[in-house]
Length: 411
Image (tube, helix red, strand yellow):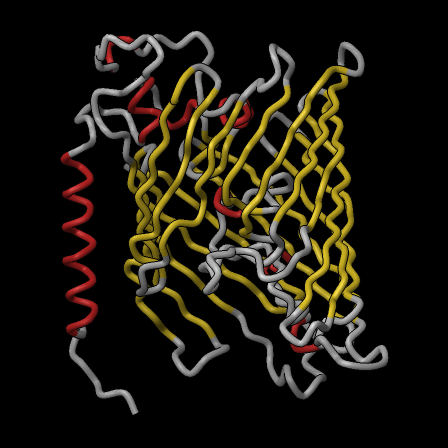
């Protein structure tokens, strides 16, 4: 049994002071102008230039990210070191940003019903241009759920990699679902459930992996644009290398792609992922995920967006004989965001997951989030998620509603 401790345990106190020290250390390297974080600081513009509200991007922010995190025509000469080398582009200080998420959470699905998750996560971010149309981006989780998580996103972005054609290349580690909806940019604490549901015993997830991805965009007509994505991934996440210093756990590579259409600020697309994995006993699981996504502006303010995926695993449990491991699943979500007043955004998110023969993984939830920005880089939020899943199966004896109060800071 855990011993009671008044207010804060020693570990939490140590963690708190470590986080404060890291924030102060980061600030030493960060320019003391009023703009935030690294991109805003570099170009001396508000966060709201790129964000509906941190961390969700608006259309300009999506264009900025798609341009390799560089602002067309921006003059950075006053921020560069004169090295005498015209082929070397160095900013006069290391570009850093900080994001801290803190929550108070109440829940009914664990032995602890009320929890102070402060901080829930603290990350250090950095990005800078290496030369025109080439940039790097990464962030380091100094603390995530009480542990040092390390690097998640870390890649080099080549914008317009072939002459002036809108052909982009991204190499590194990021999420295979980024071409659908970026989990790091959502306004809700509640995740996109199907993306993180461990449908099989494979290491494959619709989240982080080591990837080479190519994007190609062009105009079909004066009013309709088309986008194509093709990528190859290890398929087993971003774990540590093995004894042979290999990151991939088998000889196979996974592939995914997407075709999308853009018209009047609205987009629809079709995503497909195909892969296979072999365990140490040389038992194989082959799997795919496929489905549409959409992003519509219903009015000038109200946005409706969502994604549906269907999947099959040939041997989800790596069974040695028969069809015991064959598994079908489907899932997705629909979201609405509505900035109904200055500094206020209401978000709705509906998640649905169905995994056949695994009722413990099924999900049917509705989330309501209300966010208010005290400053362009500081928001407070209140969120409630209602569990509507059938409680008939023995593995789901009760519905588990959750509530969250949070503070999100970017600097």
